Length: 266
Image (tube, rainbow, N blue to C red; front, side):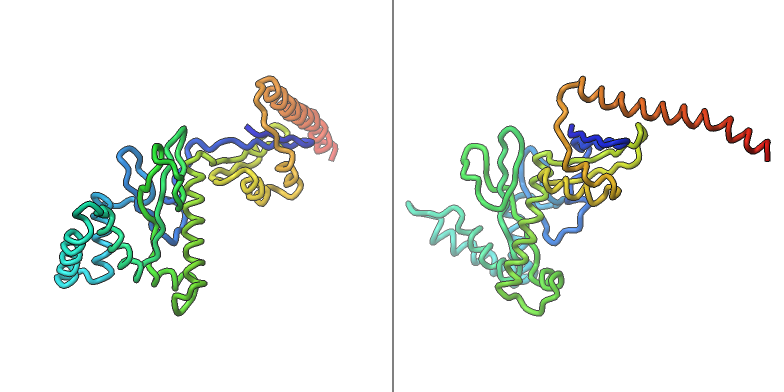
C-alpha cells in the first residue's frame, strides 16, 4: 500500500485485485490469439491450435474457397517433400511459408510468454528455453491499419506505426499479467471523497495518471506517496483522519443550536 497525507487529505494507492483484462475493456487495434494448456491468454477465439489459426489466416489471404484450399494443400505437400524430410528437415517450414504469405495482407508480431514466479509477455524472445516459449501472435489487417491511421497506402512509416501500436498493446497486457494494476482512494477529513480503479502500468506512469484525476489541491500528493508496511504507521494515519472526522462532526453539532437560536431570534 502506498500512502500520502497532507492537511485534511489522505491518498491511498493499492493493488487492484479484481482487475478485468484490458483486452476485454479497452479498444484495441490488434487481435491477440494465444494457445496455452493452462492459461486463457489474449482475446477469445475458437481455433484448435496454432496450425488451425495459421491455416485460417492463410486462406483469408489467398482466398477462402476451393481454389485457395487447393493452393494450401499443394503448398503443404510441396514443403513436406522438400523441407520436412531428410537429415536437414525444418519442422517450422510450413508455418514459416504461411506466415510469409499472410504478411501480404496482415501485420503480425509473435507473442512470447515467460512463466516463472509470475507471468510476463512481449513480442521478442525471452531467450529462456526452460520457462518461456512462443504462445501466439497479435495481428491486424493492413486495411484496418490504414483506416486507423488515416492513410491511403502501407508505407514503411505506417507499418512501423502499426507495429508500435501492437507492441504498446502487448506492453499493457504484460503489465496486467505481472499484476501491475492499481486503484486509489482519496479521503478528506476521514471521509472517502473519491476513488478510481483500473490503472495499469509501472508506478511512475500510474502516478501521472492518478494525478490527472485528482483535484488541483491534491495533485502533489502523488509525489509524496510512500510504501507503508508497518501496521502501526497505517493505523496511526487512519486514526488521525478519524479524529478529523470526529472533530468536524462535533463542530457541526455545536453550531446547530447556535443556528437554531439565530432562526428563532429572527
